[in-house]
Length: 103
Image 1: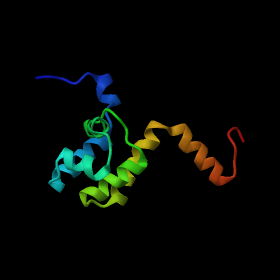
Image 2: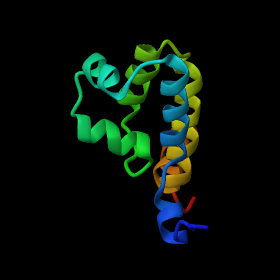
Image 3: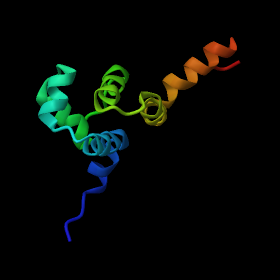
Image 4: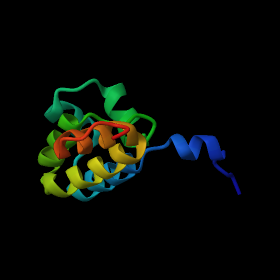
């Protein structure tokens, strides 16, 4: 059985797997998605394979193009983004609360 190296697994994005499932259920081909998004085919392929984390905007456009609920995909995107960038989310939370780090 072929195993994925741990380092590669940790770099793979969960949202890419979710987006791939959305695409499959939509019945759209990768070419359809590229055409509807007006995006670079290599970029879309990298997102769907999990090797590239998509922008928030691309994830929302993707969901709409596939006829999926973009609010749900946005929740997946936000969750993964927070896990990938915890310090930026902490700064945003502190800013919203009116505190600064170290107080």
